[in-house]
Length: 531
Image (cartoon, rainbow, N blue to C red; front, side, top):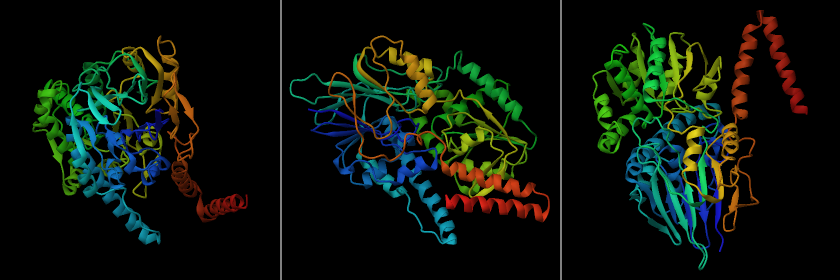
């Protein structure tokens, strides 16, 4: 009997995690995540799944982050009626994150449709609604770490703490796919946490495997010498540098865990006298709900008591309503705003960026990975102008990066994690990464004994795992060309061109010179159309 592995997401890109294991007896998904990044990648969220949703027997979730769970409501809406296996922490977080995702989609699509109507364009529908997300929650089934769980005919799974997020897991899958044959043992790493996480334990996992799917987000990064103390010192320095009497420090951050870690560190620095007392706004209804879940699970977390204390500080304000969020703009003394999304692609951070980017008394501090094509990455790379909500915004604010709050292990930590899983007899697949990290990690792993050379699959690649090694099977269709995965796309280039045209017209002296610029642009467009 055959065993096939389909890479329907997080292949040569960081988001959209979705892997399908298939035998003649059953089909099991590991993760069903939303694509983020360039518009071309995000458009995949609106397309039909490359498989029939009703044919899936079970879904196993590594954790609740939207790039791993965000299309679960769409899957259920499309006909999947099987169980969704997740740890209790993941199930609790998904119960707030998925409805929040549906709500955001409804709000953003409503705004888009208003613009479309004014422009005479067709209206669009959200991928799913808040109601769809709530309906999908009934299919969640909690599983404990370290216990085997039968998930489908011939499939059983065991969850190991991945040290990345409350409830995060690496999923070990044992698949029986032939009479009398030894089961195939496969481990999907999920997202592996770094050594210096404040709230999570060190990642764990089994040894002696046939195949491993290993995340590679920071495969080309070495954060040698990183400790929580050093991270706090660097955060202190960034806050001090950002302090302007009438300024703000904007921190785009994932609402779940990273916001809570930042809060603990900021409060520790204030209590130690390393920073003055500064108002901190957690501008996210989701972060507020997530903090409640973290409080309930505080006993399972490292430094859980410190988190509870930080959340109850008088200097911390959690804003839930839109009116409360907008009221922050009326503050005229230095303050800190932590708001989602972490890559500036949606949510309230875009409102604050629009209000502050043009002012040089503002600082934007990036504390996590910024995928290619996202607004966060464009700002991080030094754009002088950006477009937000259809409007051009000059960038005068200071851009800073403190990449020590990532929930992902760096290259040496990933290598060490894999070394502890050896032997891996038949194949290692590198996923959840862009091209430079993937190739750097592939090269780094080459000197490990008892592991084959790592494979870098492309989106929708299919591999036969039944033999002594993985064999790639020809794909039938291509949803996203490999050159487009994990890269800027034409939408980014188009937005940049519009800004450059505006600059050129504004720079031209006088009406006549401006007319010359416009005429040349029109001529170039006509020449391009003839070609």
